[in-house]
Length: 75
Image (cartoon, rainbow, N blue to C red; front, side):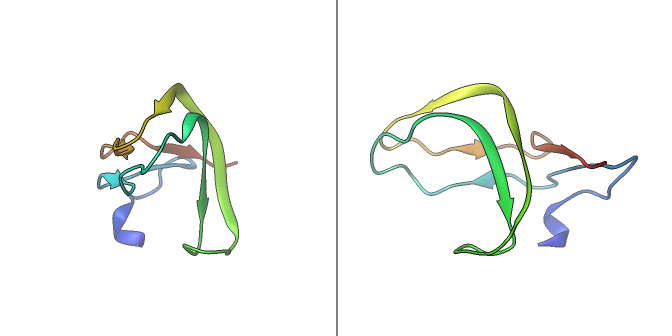
């Protein structure tokens, strides 16, 4: 929601709260990019980009972005 993000400044915005995904039930492989959608199923892609470092997600791991870690610049 809107309250999950800090106010935009100079075309940049970052997450105000931690974003955690469900525990992986198997290997997700190595992730290198992210995408934000306006719905949990289907929906429209609002933004996408590459991660600063790739992450190998294994079974039982929880992918988490701490507050301020997901930076998006528009423009």
